[in-house]
Length: 440
Image 1 (cartoon, rainbow, N blue to C red):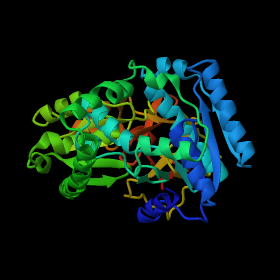
Image 2: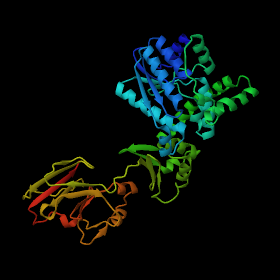
Image 3: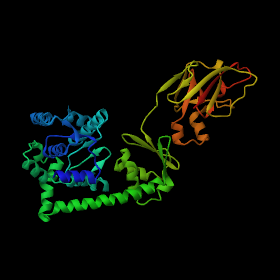
Image 4: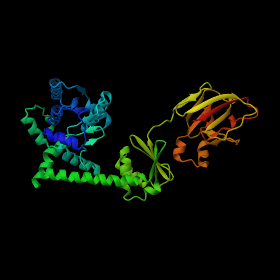
């Protein structure tokens, strides 16, 4: 068993003897087996144990058991207690999903704080099959059918080569104690229902069902690799990243078939649901301006492109600029300068430079997002014009309009930053001092 374990680690390049590995140890048979494997092979390890406070005293006994293991073998240990039920309720997710999020987020923090190279999770062969059926009920696509990955970034799963029965045999033969989680026998959890009722039914049809499923999953894993290469190659031709935004050419997107599949692969990583993705596909021929929001991102349908960006709103935020400030870093990088007007002075045609009559300004100036209803007098004109109309005349895209910043003095617009100054604050023959702002 130890030789097979080490062979599996080397085969998949999971880790080396020089790495320090954080082991997720619940006290159950799988994680205890993994602990003894790493320990016997003299790997450098530490233990992380989560008490999810879901099983009362039984959970506390699991915690004590793992602490005793760490003390017995002189292994560093980290423990934590989570209010899992409260977290699940406040985030509107299942208990199982809440426990998973809490666990992995904590593992990630420990890894960074203590500079562990990897976190090892004790999933086994049977978990692979059970996860397949769980994902089948959730409709997760080919990714959910291709099995649990042996290594993903800094998460490794070194027990995927062995079954639950083989693990139990190993522990019993070596007289290694472990804790049995009583909730594993309850079929109220979907994984347990699949483990105790669904899979045994398939085994009645095919006694070798588990091996057959593992072979199927391996083929699906290989199929997923081909699928991903094909999809990403196609998507790479129709999208471009610029200024932390993703731009997708609508015309090129519509040439992909089936478009729903490509859109799912493109947008599901950004937390868009299947229903939203279908709505986005249906909106491709509609007028521009439609917005779709996920928990983390928003997608805007512009004239010829879909624009994807992080869902960060700066509306309502205001930043003051005084004439004594030399450089502004937030929300834009702006350099300021005040100087006397001389005969040698010449106006600049650079739109990133704003030149204003200092005596006409009232400080502090305010930098803010534009609002509907804002008006100004564009340079060279005498009458007021709504910014919304000005933007239409300039044929600004929705994204460009949303990212416009306004500089104002005493509630009067001075400059549409990087676009046009207000005629009321321009340099004239009577100007004595000039206030210059340069957008960096």
